[in-house]
Image 1: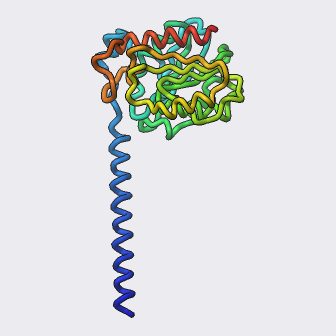
Image 2: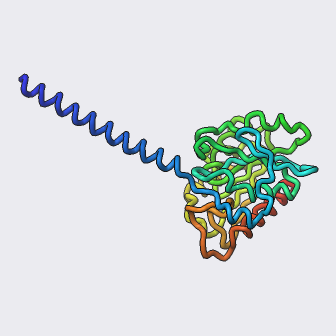
Image 3: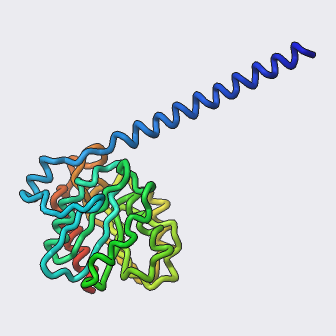
Length: 246
């Protein structure tokens, strides 16, 4: 009887040690991924916009403010992407008179700060037309934020992203845009997400575009495509300006 009890305790210890080891490996793996984001492509950024650092940084936010903004846009970066990778898109939108606020997420992971937009509108009372959105997981989190803040915004802008929050009953304007060569976006979830959007949403597919080209960074899809990184960014900025003025 004592031998049996001893075997059970030994078996339990082995099981607990195994669980702890697996948990440690998984946690370590997740941390390694989170601590090694896709780096911003500084040479591409500098080539695209010589004044790439043209923005005012306030803590975790960088603001790109035109002289006479027609709208405000709060932007959540994609997961594991350095926020600097989106400076070109923010500047391209600011050049089209849209005030852009680029959020720097903790550990470059938007899941850790879904309410990053809190209080930002109050800093710019002169703007009465506000949009929120983002790229990939950033767009997903922005859509989730609107679940409790839809009345504070005119619309949502999703780039290679989707929602799992039901926004169909809101009066939001929605722009969803992605590249035809996107090898990262979950198309099944994307299609399901369309059913959760308000009627009359705008969908744009950039022919020859990809997932990574909403920013300028390395480590995801891209390369030899019909559309260059710079071209996709400029097309996106054009689409956003057209969307906010409709």
